[in-house]
Amino acid sequence: MRNPRLVIAGVVLAAAAAIGGISAAVATGSPASGGSYGSSAPGTTAPARGASPVHTATAAVGGRTEQILVNSRGLPLYYYQPDTATMSMVDPGVAQLWPPLTSATAPTSGELPGKLTAVHDRYGSQVAYQGHLLYTFTNDRAGQVTGQGIQNFFIATPDLTPLTGTATPDSSAPAAPYGGSGY
Image (cartoon, rainbow, N blue to C red; front, top):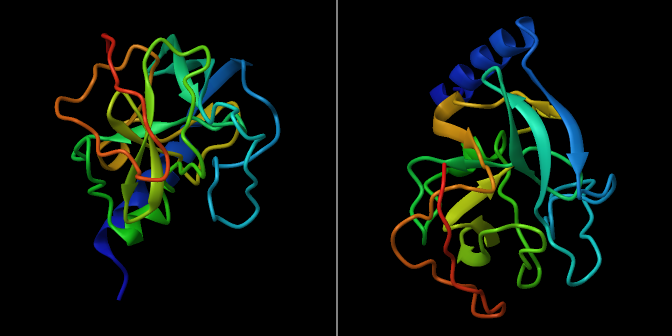
């Protein structure tokens, strides 16, 4: 029997595709190649050691143009509303549609105003921005934002308000504290 969350996600995806989704404009600061940073997902590769797994792009989200966070391939990054700073609440079935962004090494913030950390959870060393664990969406392509608001996932922006609480850094990858303001 199919997972009800996956069935609902499929229906929502079909509806989003029918209305054309939301398109992203020009990506800035994001290489065109590479994959989910350090991800073990098929067909992905990690960028050069020390490279930031998160960059910014200008995108249309909900009819407004804004700066969003993208991975090294230019795919939009999302956070899951129910997550905590120390734990992903995304079950493995939902993670098939919303793969976690993981890192083999401590991520660097690069041009971002906030802080990136690596949180050790069931998905490995998951990348968090401002304490929010980050995910991609399997329906997205570089230059497209199609998952905004689906299943409690929301687009991550550079001015994302920090999650209260302290992220538990991966013991093999020391993480910087997070801070900042916004969204």
